[in-house]
Image (cartoon, rainbow, N blue to C red; front, side, top):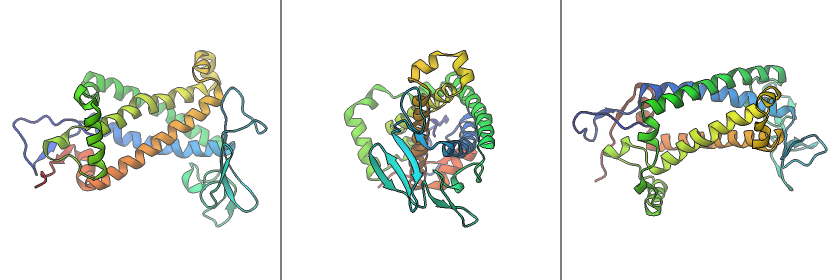
Length: 278
């Protein structure tokens, strides 16, 4: 993510300028590590009952909108009434010791790598509290230092359809901003980051709370808000999928824009301005 550089004078192409605040860099790396642990442990928990439902209840006889399982020969993903063979990735895979495992997600993607539901729950709950805490702290600090309003909230002109379509066309042609324009978020970045900060992360936290009987007793309105514990579980899974999709797109953009310059700016806060196109 980027913050507008605060420079005295006007930096030129090739200059090394300040791009990321310390709070942004700390939140980025700590959050990345925490999210890896939450995802891996969450997949182990999902392996215990690899089906998703809408509504209040969910058990084996109830109709699931998504399930991952295995037949005698194949791993399968069932989405509604459609079935896809996913052998080697989902449902049926080979463990590190060479043995076959009939688990929704393979051992290389889960924490712990061996199936241990109790340990996975401890990892997940411990780091869920850390995730919620650092997210609240970062959100409050972003309001105090005006990072949220100054760098993320779109300006009126950026919401014009023509402006959005032009940004989409530039990204499709891999024409990324250069010069001073590279120090500011474009409208696509703002939309992606706001979706993560305002929808996906709060959604993950609230649906996670809804799946906890203790929180349901303290805040019974959570069940009404999400339409039941099973709906909350489905939404929790979809929010997690959304974060994974964001991560993949984010990494692709970093690689295409120049990984050394981008990663250096997230470690040191310094960014070399790309030269303008001739």
